[in-house]
Image (cartoon, rainbow, N blue to C red; front, side, top):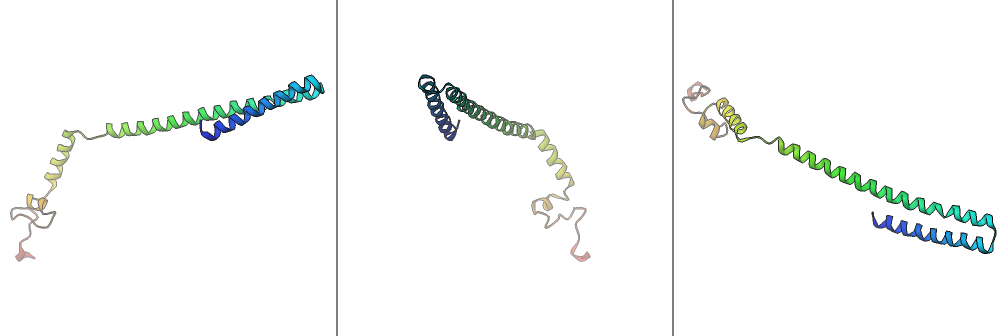
Length: 124
């Protein structure tokens, strides 16, 4: 429960005590109908405290569900990691698709003379 909600609940409790005191005083010294009004009005702060605590529980539950969703997303992401065998197979496919070793190591700048895509300078 947040600090504001606790403060609000304590104010509602103080109002309940005040209204209950007024109801008792009206029963003892005043009109009976006014005592019933104060008694009925003293129920309202009790309902407000119940509502504030229910909202606090709902917020905590929502926060816990949100954190659980984040954890589930992280777990799914870690389950999708590639195994060593998958990475090795991908590297073999990429190397097989490459022209030649010099092309691979020079980032596509030059080819070996035995490469199928090698162009002679005289052909340029």
